[in-house]
Amino acid sequence: CARAPLLCCNTRSTLTRRRSTAMKSSATDKVLKKRRLAERTPKPKGAPAAASAAAPPPAAAPAASSSGRAWTVSLALPGSIVDNAQTQELRSHLVGQVARAATIFNVDEIVVFSSDGASPAAPQRTDGSVFMARLLQYLECPQYLRKAIFPMHPDLRCVGLLAPLDAANHPRATEQCAYREGLISEKGGSKDGRSGAIVGLPKEVSVDRRLPAGTRVTVRMPSRPGEPAAVVPPREPREKLGLHWGFSVRLAKDLPSVWSECPFGGGYDLSLGTSDKGDSDWLQGEGFRLPAFKHLLIVFGGVEGLEPVVEAHPELAAHGIETSALFDLYLNLCPGQGSRTIRTEEALLVGLAALQPHTRRAGAS
Image 1 (spheres, rainbow, N blue to C red):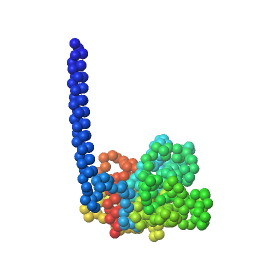
Image 2: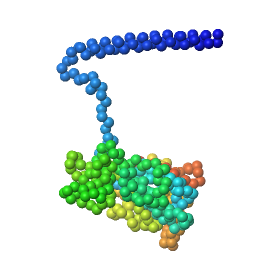
Image 3: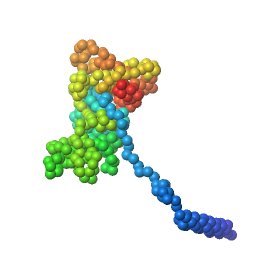
Image 4: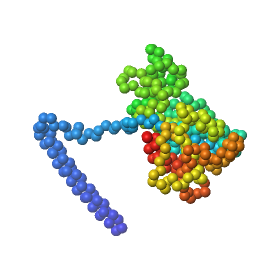
């Protein structure tokens, strides 16, 4: 008796399935009859086929900006910020956050300076500035070139845990792009004396000149088959197409060397210091504008800010120079903060996001 309802349910479900199957078969027959009738009906000349009309358009490659970008943004921060991390994994993760922030906000140069007041690194650790610079250079390099450029090193032990930058100079093998990063191969190249380069494609490409093996180059891909790729300056993708083509990494022995060793002709024409003691009213005013610039420098401090770095420098302290006097602008990029301290990797994201619309407007002008 207990199984009777179950059997009834099974019988109902079987009948329901049969009915639905019969209905589906009849509906299918109707569709097939309509298709046969449509095929027999003559089509007017010039009418496109239904299949071709419904075909989706091919996926287009991401378009670059039609206008180039002549101005640059440089970022300077102390390498001592990694010394506060307890493990190799945490140190590497911190540098990965710096690299991601620089890529997201189109930073063209990262300067890692040493702060004299920082505590010395442990004997088994690399100096914080050197460690940060090495990992930044590794992360900026396209994945298909890293094995050939960077030998094995203890500092790179945890780089596999870091998020990729996915920047414009890290193209995929199937991606059509105007420029690529390459490495001159050890093979002889073409018979006409040109070198071959590894550019992340299944085959090497020939470049328009002879260069030593192991040289990293930026190449403009040929527009026609059989033509060589042109070796161009790394700044050309940015200046012509507005692409963020990675960032350069520079080590500075102290804070003043950030300015004195500037690689741009004429130096930085606008420098901006960040501190919780800086101007906090700049966000309140609607008329705030950055002065027009060509090369902008944004300097972030360490755990205790920029003031201890300036006070620990012998020459700056001897002349009694205040920290704010070193910069054209001295701003608090996160006024009204809820925490007593903001970590440098957090300040990068907050500050660069707040400054981005102002830097674009001032740089374009």
